[in-house]
Image (spheres, one colour):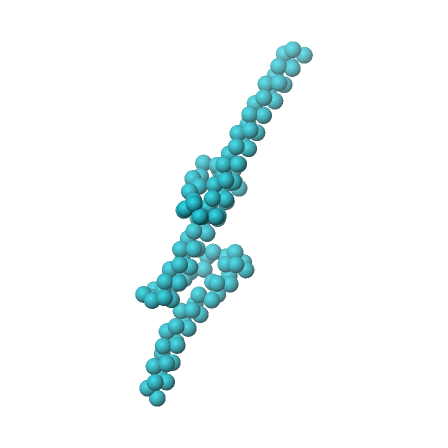
Length: 124
């Protein structure tokens, strides 16, 4: 009987925290939801898994904030990939650089066009 109680308690300490992670595990890939809180504080493999999920959510929130800023026309944001292997961060850096280059080219074309119109008005 004692063995059954120990097995039940051990299983419960594993399944309860994993059950808390399960809704989050489907919300992110299926709905893109980043607002779910993970409140698991343990010093074992399940706690490490929860901390990894939390770090991933923080990273994705940072990338979402960058994309919102860039989409809103704010090119003064700082895009800093976490490493050379940071696929998403490096893609954002390339996108940011391209947007900056396109905006500079567009501004130059507008200035040139205005100068051409002004010159045409003077010369006729």
